[in-house]
Length: 88
Image (cartoon, rainbow, N blue to C red; front, side, top):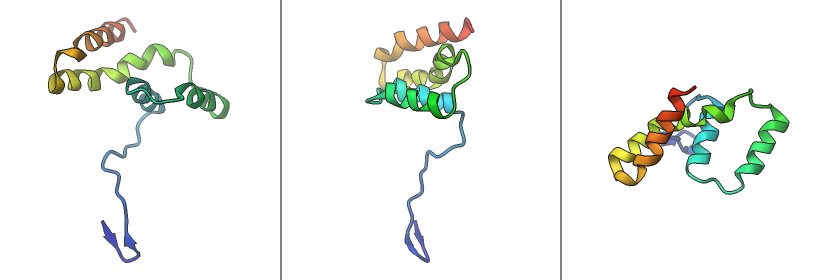
């Protein structure tokens, strides 16, 4: 987008989501050095107890969307995330 100062980049996916959701997405799509990111979170602002059990709930929508758009290879992980979410 152009502004009076020049070109400005607008992130079309920007949101004010929960940090657990952000970490779940990084995990889902395989961020290199995720352990380092998680350690930094714990050092700066520790995550609340049980956050790891909630990861599938944050991933479920995106897994289901990928299953719908890209096919059956996402089926088993979607079903597993749904099962774990229901158990919360």
